[in-house]
Length: 500
Ligand code: MSP
Image (cartoon, rainbow, N blue to C red; front, side, top):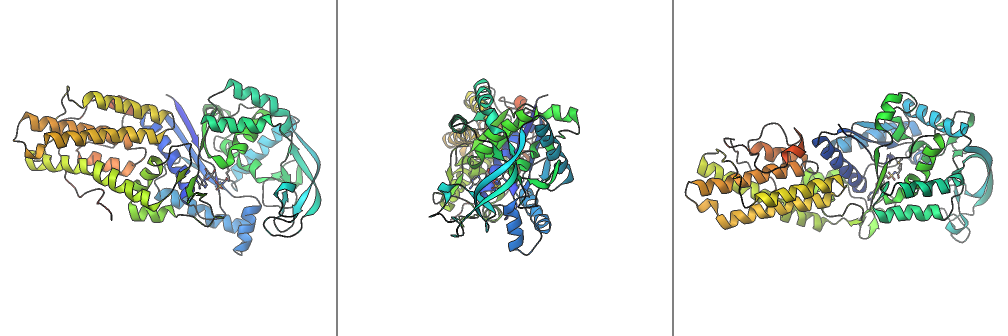
């Protein structure tokens, strides 16, 4: 059995999740679901990133302690993911004792291996931000956020010897061309490394909302150094060697392009420094933009995924997110595009196919399903389509999988138009066209399940199939002709009534 370990970034709990976060989650969820369908042993990990200055400030702004604040926000993420049907297996909160334990043992190894040292950090500091700035980031010498003068500050910090890893990282990229995708993002990461890497400060004394440094209680680890290690906390690094070796390093990290440097430069170097293999695969997706800008709390252009799901139906939103944007590129969210996808792809194509077939089977054949024909004009095309969908799913290309599936829906609808079973007398021609269309629907349910699990399950039920499209091994179910006759078909209400 193959194993499939997939992770999402862990989200800052400075605000409730928006559609940009949901985009990462729905994508990762679709990959996890597909791999479960093909009988892989799947471990799908997500969580919340709860330490650091940003969270401490959000807590203070809301008159709460950081702990109270994160305890109130983390369930909002879990609740949102439940409502969006995200099938994660584990949820890490970085404030959990298991995570403290892992961070401390991992970084202790890095320290003992000689890659962490103490030095003085000198920098330009904004007291209001409690953060250092580079000269170039300042606005006429002032903090770009507060507009106040920065001060030159010195702090004793622990540093990670990132500079020692420039050559090793370049070699690693050379030996593992598949490690970071798509290739444009791999080149971006290589660009950072080729510039030469500087050591980085990885502890803070100016804030205590973090994981304490085990060998020096004055310091806490800088939030990124704690966050990245969540991927190891979940697989019991340092606690259960067998479990750790089962899942590591063959992991797939799904990340947004804003966090390439951390995942594709720092993280592999940290792994090397701790004496473990770097992650096998990091897939970088683009941003969901609104009016050309990244959707973000600070941009004030957030869209609430739960509101959209209430309005359009959850599966329609999941479909839109994965269908409208090539995974890896930026996508633009518009209400109009969502409405148009809904009406054209879901109401007119998928919904219509289901409605026509079930209506005719019920009205002409008393609901008794005929079987598909082995030499159907659709058989070869359907075989090719399902093969493309399978390949697309294995290459993290949900848009291509959906495009392939919709070409089958198109063909099935086109054949119905030509043969017009609603006008035919009882007989083999009527039975064949309906049996073939039902077989197309069975295949569509399998390929579509990772994106639209509820819809696929409902279509599956209406066409009289037992269980759910995720049962059995999808790879074996992809070949033409497995739909059984004598199923009882149900004509239900339209799944996607047209919208204005
Ligand atoms: N906490 C860090 C990640 C630590 S992982 C060890 C973080 N959190 S975040 O909440 O700011 O963003 C997490 C992820 O959300 C981004 O990397 C990205 O995957 C996703 N997105 C946030 N806004 C997004 C869009 N507008 N569009 C697409 N994805 C977006 O960074």
